[in-house]
Length: 222
Image (cartoon, rainbow, N blue to C red; front, top):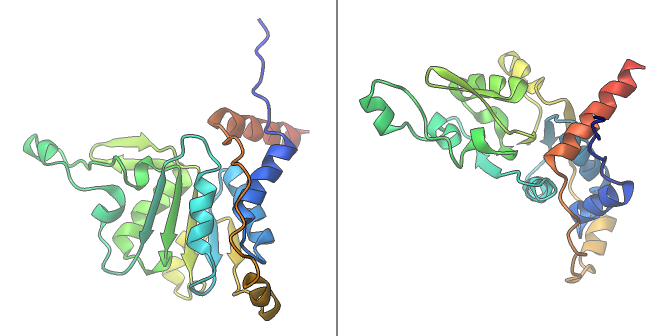
């Protein structure tokens, strides 16, 4: 029996997703295209720019483009704890001499995640993130779990200068500068009004993402 491969999302549907990402965000066309492209390819993106440049808003919109993708967002500081990202310890597991976390609703169960000031996290968090971002796996107690992560969007005011952060920096295949809106763009922003967005396009399914990955592998193999 011939197996029918899942269809790729149409160009018109992808264009509709780009329009939803860009809605009333001026001078963000390049950023939105790179975000969607990276997520479709299963890669992570680092947005580098000052506060107020719509970095978190873009991540929130991106998660709506993917069917069933849960969203997770955190602002990281040097005082952030692993519990804030990976979930609290299970007291029931501790009673049985097991060190496990309750991960539901936290980063290990997210499809799209936004980590603000990502390079300010301490080494315990960054080391755990390395495996999660690169291998799509999370060590929970004695077991290693596959995670449903599609893409992590990291944000920072500037690229790290500390050599110890370079390994984590390299986990982000795309590093996109995000500048404040220009003077001309700011004038246009004041004239936007409250124009409603078009109807949301049909979310991209996991099967369609697998079809994109398969088509990419076949093209690279030629």
